[in-house]
Every structure is written in structure tokens, then in C-alpha cells.
Length: 178
Length: 357
Image (cartoon, rainbow over all chains, first blue to last red; front, side, top):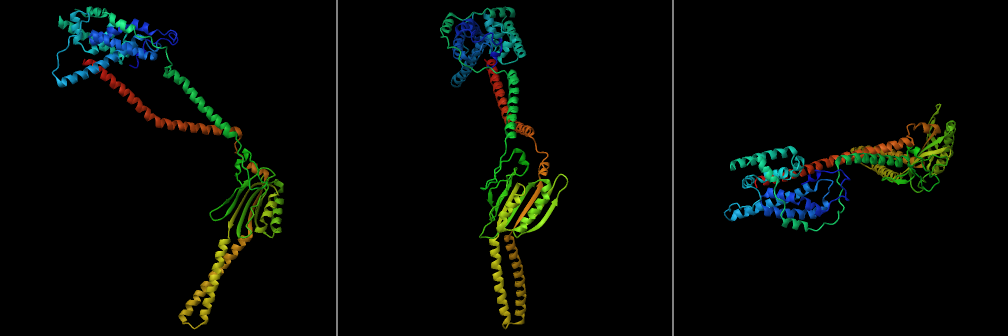
């Protein structure tokens, strides 16, 4: 993600090298946000845990490039988490294709309990990852439209449109479940 | 279950498990922030870079103008004589000759014209060959006081005649502010060196040129042709004295007439060649000193030359810039298009992946 560091830009000098937070402080502050974002996106607690761990390892390696003046640590970590999730989705899709080429596809694996009510978990499962992602960013993490849009690489208007459609579909799934 | 309830439940999602927290918080603290490139912001960068580039371009042009405009162009006339002079920049309107001797492909030697600005400049003579026939030509431009042009012309004629030569032509014109006398003198080649120096001593030599062409080969060819024609004539005349048919006699007489005619023409040509090799042609122009200054009224001053050179350099810079833009713009546009296209493709791929997952 190229633009995520452009959001929540602080005035130059307000957070210079002297005010740079420690990696441990940033990790402790935003670990829950990263985990919950990945949890909603993947609907797999174990996978979210692994991807969150990988996200912070990537953050550790890229820590020198992080500039607090260019964006908040939370959006920077979320962009790393998103890239980690996308990488996993791609490798998972390739793995599925290889397996489908040599054997009958197995039924969908039951994901571990997310800690949500069953109707909501079923409704989330019926949504695409794209819908779940925009809900995670705007609802779970409570990012503003511009921050979420920068993270997704779209305009704020498009981000709001996506959110509305995702919520509408979520509502439809919840109503269907009723 | 309503959407509001669902959203409330989503906002109350549990945080990271203890195992993950321990794993992440156990990560070591990275090293201190290393050096990194400063983030460039386009607008402030342009605000600084554009005037800076403009200042550098104008400064370079001004420097070039100062260096090129004020630099003196000195031309030294060598030749081993004392005619060496250094030209001031203002003299560049006068042809800048040097006295290097050059040899043309036809065997001609040329003493390239020399200009001088001081009274110390004197005519120098390239010595003609003493063993071969030469056509010797010299041109002199000599500055004299305006009221001495007539006297200098008269003295030049006396010099030519004194050395056994003659005056081929004189063209003298002395109006109120400008004056000029052009003399074409024929002087024996053997004496032309001395004569040239004396002609130059009548004023300040501003320019001179000497050209020497070898005529020996031409004269030798003409002599050989004359010998052949004489022999042919004698042979024809001997044949005519014998017993031959009328038709043969008529043919030989016609041939004899032709040979005699060609002999006469060749002999005339040979005499002209010998004359040309014997007498040097010296063209001397005496002109008033004020006329030289008047002849270059538009000679630019130092400031004007500086400004002109700076302007020329600035135009060159602009042409380089235009060339760079013309060459680089398509490449830059292509690179931007590729980058934008790649980013759009990647985002599209990410979106499709998430929508199908």
C-alpha cells in the first residue's frame, strides 16, 4: 500500500525522531486492532493469529522505514496486515487449485468460533472477504472514510459505497437467517 | 437480529489472545532509526527547484558571457620576423591573419595575411625561390595619416620604379574624412622583399598576404613544346624541299602553317610565363587611419559582447532543455503509464481475490 502513510499525517516536527514511539509500545497499542481486522477478514481465529504474528514480524523488519509524520502506526500496521492476508489468500487459492486438479474438492472447513453470535457468524460467512474487510475497517476499527479509502486504494466515496453495500448484504443475510 | 445489534457485536469483538500477545511482545526492539530518504513533496520542491534551476541557467549564461565576452583574442604573426603583434579584441573586425606559410596542392606558398595595430608592425617578405620560376603576389593594407595618403602613394610608385618595376595601376581617392589609394605594382621578384618592406614602412601595416605559385613546371612544359614544334617545322620544311606529290605538298604546307601558328602561341605563352615569374605583383592599399575606425562602427563593446554571449548561451541552454524534454517526455509518460497501469492491475487483482474469497 503506497498511500496509507499519507493519512493521519501529523505536522512536521510534532513527532520527530525524538518523539518516535518504540516498537513495543506500538505493538502493544495496536495488536488488538490488527488481530480483529484479520479475524473479520479471514473468519479464522487461528489464521488471524498467525497472520497477526507475521504482520508484526514484517513491521519489525520494516520499522526503519516507518515515518510517524507520514501516517499513523495503526494504518501502517493494517496495510501490512492486509498484504499478509492477501498473500495468504493467493497461496491458499493456488493450493486449492492444485488439490482440485488431483482430487474431489472437500467440503468447506468449519472455522473456529469467532466469539460472535451464530447468526452473525453465518451472515459474515456469506459475505465476501471484500465486504468483510470494509466492515472491519469502518465498523470494527472505526477508521474514518478517508483512512479506510487510503488503505483500500480507492476514493472515500467508493469506500462509503462499498460499506453501504456490504452492510446491506449483511442485513439481507441476517434477515434470511431469521 | 438487527443490523445495529450486529454492528454492536462486531465492535465488541475480542482482542488478541494471550498467546499472540506474548509472541508479539516478545519481539526484540529494532535498532534505532537509520538514515532514510526525506519524503519529497512536489509543490514545495517545485517552488524551490524551479527558481534554483533558473538561477543556475542564467548564472551559467552570465558567466559564459563574461568569460567569452571579455577574453582577448590574440593573433600572433610569426614567421621569425619582428612583425609579431597581439591583437586587441576590438580589432577582430579586421581579418585576423596569421603569417603561417602554407603550401597549396599546386605547389603554391602562401604567406597568410597579417594584421597589425601598432606602428611597430612592418611588412615582411616571403623570400622567392632563387632556383625556380615563381609567380609572386603580395597584398598589403597600410594605414597612414589621411593627409599622407597621396605622399605615400607617390613614394610607393617611386619605390616600384626604383627597383626596375612599374606601376600597373593607381586608384586614389581622398574625400574629406576617408581616404584610400590602391596601387598595383610590378616589381622584379628578386627585389620584392626589399620593396615590400619599404612599402610597409610608409605606414602601419594592418594586413598583408603573400602568395607564391611555382611556374617552373609550366615554363618547362612550354619549352619542351617549343622544341618539339621547331623540330616538326624543320622536318616539314625538309620534306617540302624533296620530291613529293602535289597533294602531299599541300597537306604538308597546311601542317606547317598549323605548327608555326602553334609555335607562335606557345612562345607567347612562354614569354608571359617568364614575365610573370620575373615580375611580382604587389597590391598596396594605403588608407586613412580614421577610415579603419569608421569601417567598423558596429563593432560591439565589451558589455554588448558579454550580453550577446550570455544570450547565446541561454538560447543554447533552452535548446538543450527542449531537446531533453522532447526525448525524455515520451519515456517519462510511458513509465508513468506503466506504473499507474501496474498499480491499477494489482489493486484490481486484490479486489477480485477478496470478492471471490
